[in-house]
Amino acid sequence: MEIINRKQRMASIARKLRRESKTVGFVPTMGALHEGHLTLVKEARQMSDIVIVSIFVNPTQFGPGEDFERYPRDLTADAAMLAEYEVDYVFAPDTDEIYIPGFSTYVYVEGLTETLEGASRPGHFRGVATVVTILLNTVRPDLAFFGSKDAQQVGVVKRLTRDLGFETEIVVVPTVREESGLAMSSRNAYLNEDERQKASILYQALREAKLAFKNGERNASAIAQIVEDKIATEPLARIDYVAVVSNDDLEPIDKIADSEVLVAVAVRFGKVRLIDNVILNRKQ
Ligand code: PAF
Image: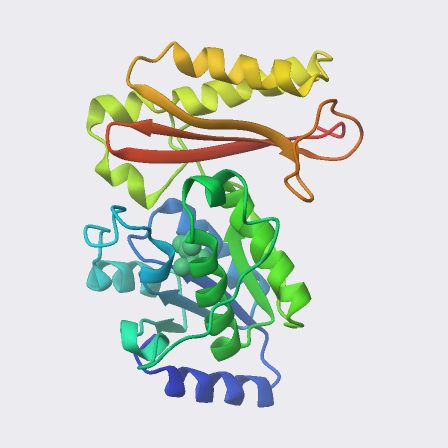
């Protein structure tokens, strides 16, 4: 496994791999790797000849007062894990390799980025879309792997690859959960043991929504209410939003019909903000 710091070297290896007709699978991360990331890597390993993982804590997707400075960083530990999973290249650039001096070009995906996480974290998706564009342009993978915990990010990335004509196929991998049901996230490391147990209320609430849907509930606000009521039973939890929206365009809906519906939540536990979601569809 080679660790690459320079964008130019990464791009030149990517060119060589394309000339050799290798299938390249790419997993973009911000490091602090956990089982969720490793599941993406395993999937990439199965579907590709060459696996490239990027580790880059992207400053432009953090808002003022968010956790950019204290975001967990441990390249040595992350690289050791990736070596075990037979990753071929780790791309770990410094900030000024990605945001070169005088950088002034950003990618903004309209509409989709204005609700949910976009409304709570202004500028977040501009940062995500910009860095993902730079990374895809450098690595030029055949496949790129994203976790469905970040459902809105998946939508944004799919839209930008389509609109900007990237040939990369976006592969979405189901959320990996702790035994309690809590979705794996690098930010879980900020929770103390008590908060970590109690944070499983997010998934319990989402499961109740799923059950209600299975039992015939089709009213979006009733589903949202079920989720809110359940989360409200946990005194440590402070709801940022509970949304029941179309999974295609993230527009709010009244009645759940045939197309997929995303039930998404963002909840604070102390200073830690957690997100999670489930998809409702008739085929489940
Ligand atoms: O999901 C993440 O870890 C980040 O948003 C990503 C896609 C690596 C972009 O910085």
